[in-house]
Length: 204
Image (cartoon, rainbow, N blue to C red; front, side, top):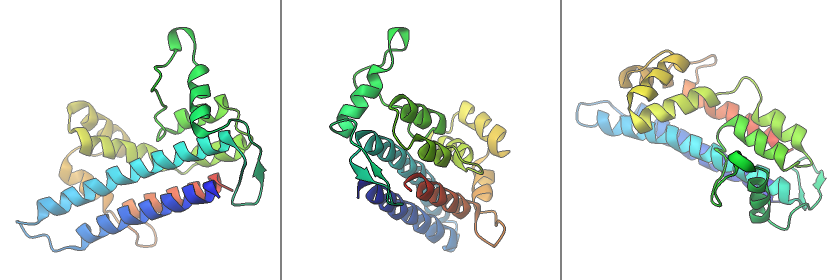
């Protein structure tokens, strides 16, 4: 049930991010309230990446610990005694100059690092999880660039945003997020829909 719980939790978090973003987008943009609406949309972007990071962490570590059932009905055998034990085992795979600190964890929102962690732990359903996390099309590169732009506002974040999404001012980035896509959904909503599909595939 833990994989189903991880999936359900991500869906709830993603829906909360969607509601926060859409509520701010739909609100009247008077001069006095526009800044708060921008902050709400930016908060929703940060919230979405954090939710995806938690989902990837939970999925990989739950599968590593094992003794769980996927949403498709397959049983993953027990490998480690707990998620904590699996995380310790993951750190132990790094030796020599690559040795990690005792509190180190991968950047779970990064598909490459999450997949590497799953591979190092040799989770039984690695093919399924890695295919889902690393699937294409994926919004993860754009989400990360925009999230970092909002969170840091520095020159480096601006350069990355321009490289990845083609815009680098606050006004342009907000326009980018709210641009209607095929079917009428906003770009941010499309990101959520893609991540929901990736999460669903990852826990089957």
